[in-house]
Length: 252
Ligand SMILES: NC(=O)c1ccc[n+]([C@@H]2O[C@H](COP(=O)([O-])OP(=O)(O)OC[C@H]3O[C@@H](n4cnc5c(N)ncnc54)[C@H](O)[C@@H]3O)[C@@H](O)[C@H]2O)c1
Image (cartoon, rainbow, N blue to C red):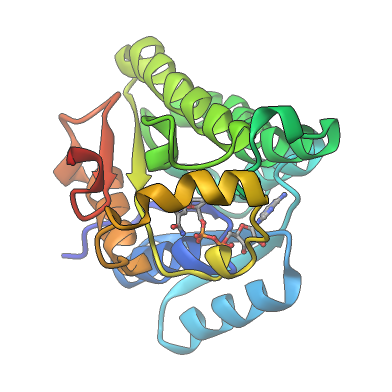
């Protein structure tokens, strides 16, 4: 039997990188995936690919930083399936390694909006539905920058630390209602995100000191496998955890 058979799963940021790998992996394990992203064209390609290979997936275009859009995503899952079991808050944006003194209001708001407001809006809408379904699993894609201070700029680091805090609080508060909530802290994963980085010169110069310590880059499917473990029954006694998927980067 497949590990997510009969489960309804929302995955944000599913048009690319880690979210795309999660959507494919979860569908291959029998979940009905509601794949979501702000990038409609690439999202449709991912969903079409899953359906062509025999999986169950539908697309919902959504800017997760907008409350109504995030709430609409959960409403779409409930309307299509009548329940929600898994929420993967994976959409995220970088801050170009910008140190705090250089961080504009706009950059701060954008990063917080996607990386923190989005998971907040989605969790707030999803939790009552999960409680109604008898429980659920939330997997938040944080980052090594969610547990260490030197893996990103100020906004990105603050947003991912806050996401880790939110993860632990949700795990603590809603555990008795049958909801498990965990975070993954990926290290350097080969996705288009890194290619979009236009590094701030000061932030880049400081980060460069660490580059020799970065292990060989991981692939998105390594993170998707960790998410599958946390979302499935195999992770049934795991909640409030921050699982590093970083080739050991945080250990040295
Ligand atoms: N790649 C890495 O090295 C790495 C390391 C640590 C953490 N992460 C985290 O992993 C997650 C996925 O990143 P990735 O590397 O796959 O990047 P990616 O850029 O390949 O994918 C991110 C996806 O999020 C979508 N997105 C951006 N803003 C959105 C919004 N407002 N609403 C909905 N979707 C939006 C993008 O369109 C894109 O499809 C992010 O949260 C990122 O912070 C990545």
